[in-house]
Length: 330
Image 1 (spheres, one colour):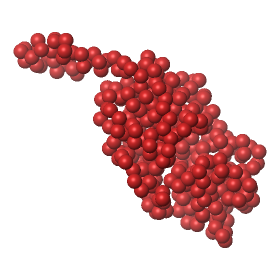
Image 2 (cartoon, one colour):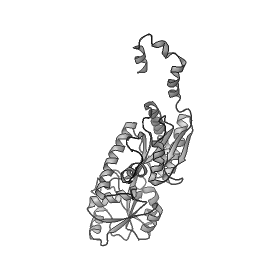
Image 3 (cartoon, rainbow, N blue to C red):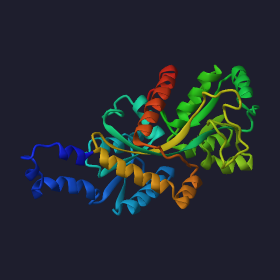
């Protein structure tokens, strides 16, 4: 396209294009990245977010021939790390590990968000998702969603569910379940998945939802009863768990997903280079295996625009749940 455009320029302009000072920007674009790229993970070190981010950073760095430096900026449910990238320069040297809860849902439930999650970011590409599994303490006499509906309707006091905190995926998915089943369930927020899981295992709470990988040992031991996977297809990790659609509730869908985003107005050619490097990383069988060990099923987006459409659709879907369930972070 550039060559065709150059051929149509007046002759008097052509000598100017040959001047060294005017061709440097084009060469700089071709060399991108020519210095280290920062990937901000909006969580402290450790945990699935950190593992996923570091795997992707290492793979992208190798494919682009440049170091990717991981910076953990946890706090405020992801808002601190998100805001850091939103206010970064637009050249493509500051990227964010975006997630379903920390990036998208947090923007719907937090009372004060210092950025616009749509206008202030450039979607680069989708990494994959870990479908959420719906688990009960075995004392709850339900083995599928229909039975849970009947038990919840009769329960007095209401069934309870624990989450890692207000506005997390572990909060909004049970809220969606309660709305869809037409029942009441009581939310008990914790500071992290661990304490919530402990109380479900002890029988002090009725239900928990989370990515499959951390709950798998407890499901296999019988300490938790998995009644459905909130996904459109069964998981290869535990293929015996039926999907919510199979049980008659196809709109109950939720996953812990990950993607890469940058600040707004990133140059399109740099977004394309990053997207290609990300997809090449995800095509590596060893990286895909290690991500699956974290419960993340690799699902690269064909283009950055496809990832942008996914973000818009997922945000609209969760916005409806947040509004109807009146979910607000205090």
